[in-house]
Image (cartoon, rainbow, N blue to C red; front, side, top):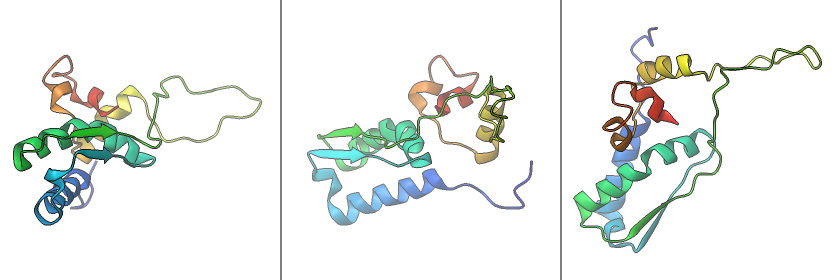
Length: 129
């Protein structure tokens, strides 16, 4: 698939926002950081909470705690969609295991290194959820 020059920048935005909060608002001095997001942002918060902690520790000498508190963002594979007749099945966005690999490649998705360095090294898209 082509995106005609477009790219997804969610993780780049997180990186810039976190750097700004550390540099301009002393986030590194906090005792507690709540790392959250809603809907798709909840999924992003879940996959980036360890990165946020590691980044704070390495750039701001952070000694506090980071809590991941997603609001939604709990997606499950629809590898086995409903195919009944009553009610008739609704259209859906594929969220299957095969689709995850395509989304990972299309989005150049950020995935947690603690996952990709371990059991999912050969299938990093499995670390998206």
